[in-house]
Length: 318
Image (tube, rainbow, N blue to C red; front, top):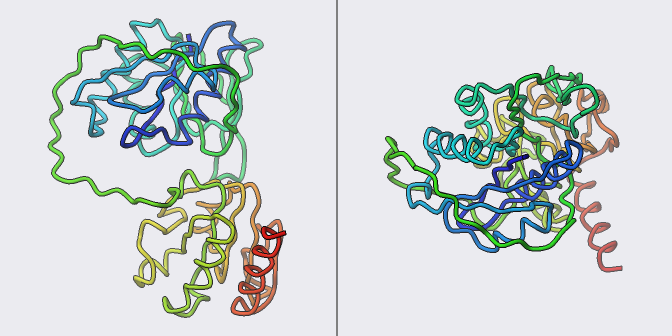
C-alpha cells in the first residue's frame, strides 16, 4: 500500500494534499497496489480525497492532533503505516513534511528522499529524482529499503481527479501525549501561502521605498498572484518577513515568478530558481537575474509595471 499524509489547516485541505494524493495514486498504480490517505483531526470533505485517487481515507480524530507536534505526528503516522502495512509513505514537502520525514525514516528504519520532483521509476527498483546544488542539477536516488518515505516538492504534480468520493474510516491509533504547550497560533489569512502559490510577484530595492509597493500589489491582484520580496526589503521592514524568498527565506517553485527591481544575487536565486518560468523586470541590463530569466524586460519598473498591469486587466476583460 501507498499511504499519503494529507495535511489540513483548520479542517481544510491544502493544495499540497491533493498533489500528494495524486502522486500517491499514480505511484500505487505503478507498483500494482492501492493508495490510501491519512488525515488528522476534524476535516471537511475528507471523502473528496477519493476523487484524487485514494481508495480509502483514514482519519485519526484525537484532539491532541489539533496543533502540530512533530514527535506526536511521527508516532501516529508510523503506527498507521505499520497497521496498514504501507511500504511507501508520501508527504508534501511543506514545513510539516520537512519536520516529519527524518523522524519517520528513523522510526520505521526506512530510506527517505525529500523534495522529489518526479514519479518514481519502478522498473528494476525504486528510483526518484530531486534537485541538488540549489537546483543547478538533478540527482537520481535509488531507495532499497523495505519501507520508503518521500516528500513531494510543491507544484511538481498537478492535482488530477481520477475517482469518486470515498467514505472516511476512523483508524484506532494510540496518540501519545504532547510535550509541547502551544500558547498561541497566528496564521496568515486571505492569501495563498508562498510555498503553495502558482504565481508570485516579487520586488526588491528597485522599488526605492515601501510607499511605492502599491504598483506591485496591483499587478499581483490582477494576476491572482501572491506577493514576495527580496531579503534587503524584508530587513528594511518595507515588507513583512514572511514574504522574503531566497536561500535564507522561503524557497518557492511557482509556475510563474515575476521579479521586479531585484538584481538576482545568488542567495535569492537559490530560493526561486526552481520556478517553471521566470520574468525579470530591471533597468540594469547587466543585472545577474537576466541570466536565469526565461523572459526579461530592460526598463524603468515604474513605467513597465503599470503598463503590464493594464495589459493583464485588458486581457482578462477580453
